[in-house]
Image (cartoon, rainbow, N blue to C red):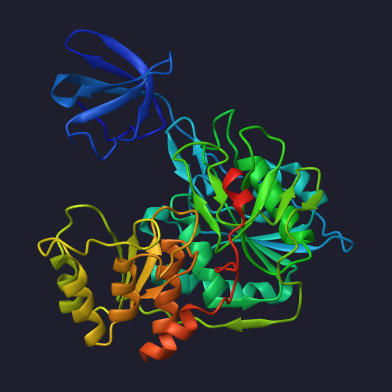
Amino acid sequence: MNMKDSKPGDLVQITTDKEILKGILMPRPELLKENITVLKLDNGYNIGIEQDKIKQIKTIKGYTPIKPKKIQHKQDKSLPNVAILSTGGTISSKIDYKTGGVYADYTAEDFVEMCPELKDIANLKSKKIMGLMSEDINPDNWQEMANLISKEIKDVDGIVVTHGTDTMHFSSAALSFLLKTGKPIILTGAQRSIDRGSSDAFMNLICSVNAAANFKGAGVYICMHGSSSDDHCLLIRGTKVRKMHTSRRDAFRPINEKPIAKVFPDANIEILNDNFPKKSDQLELDNKFEKKTALITVYPGMDPSILDHYIDKGYKGIVLAATALGHVPTIEKEYSLLEGIQKATKKGIPVIIATQTIYGRTHPFVYTNLRKLSVQNNCIFAEDMLPEVAYVKLGWVLAHTTDLKKVKEMMLTNYHGEITERSDSNAFLI
């Protein structure tokens, strides 16, 4: 077998002991064994052939890689200016169907090629700032994003950050605290890959550029499909949003408050909730985060020593995603978290109580066991903050102070709409 002259993407003829096959030579996925050659047949299916059964691979036609088209678009001085910063994810990728490979390094021209409507909404510039699946994004990346956004936002009317969807709501919360801005920062992504007819990528991008260009508010928001149809997107506050479905196009929902607006692909914006900061010249990078901050889900039968693990590891703060109003196992000594909580607070480690029910709010006094946490052990109840938001906020707070009294004061201060005075009962139905 001679493969020296054949490379992925080439049209080849493979001769085996039993047959002659013709198709496109494909890259071998990492999950396959090294002795497997992958061929895409004319019918579109891929097959794997053991290399010791191959007698010859003959190149019929060499492969020429796809090169993105470079179409220059004139700047329209009458339009707003928007920067698109790509962090990775499906929305930032193009697929080469011959090889199945993906490349991503979009320019503004590439985005306009994808969505010609964009050129009528804003003048675009684009930059790839990282290339990560969202499950791999961490606090270091949040800080890097905040730093780069602070540099780009000075010269534009708004910013769109394309992002993988799995942890987008973590990043929107983090950017809300790390970067105070008088302009809109819009995070968006795609639930369905850009090569599928049902992809949500195009409308999400169009609506997000519209929001970045024309929304009269400031701060960090997520803009994604508002329904399973292609009728509108929802603009949702970055500290009041959560991914609530693994695959639906309208997976991102507002939590405990109404969405800020409906954003339509025809450039209209319908305000639904006018509780948002207005545009200004404010720009402050507050790029600090204490990475030794833990988020722990409470569940029946959990091992209380998990708290000892974080304490012994030198963690500075703990958020408990407790049940309902803020309950944790209390009575049965084998499972009670009280001893671990007491150990933490005596060491000056704040323990924050959020609720895993997502909707609704915690309460420190309704039941006796809640009072044991709030009164006897100085736990800080997180009002109606999402557990993820409480975690991000605590990491930001601890980077500024470790004084328990000051930590409590800052955690219960509403900086970016993360706490509502009264939960909107209608928000549950949206």
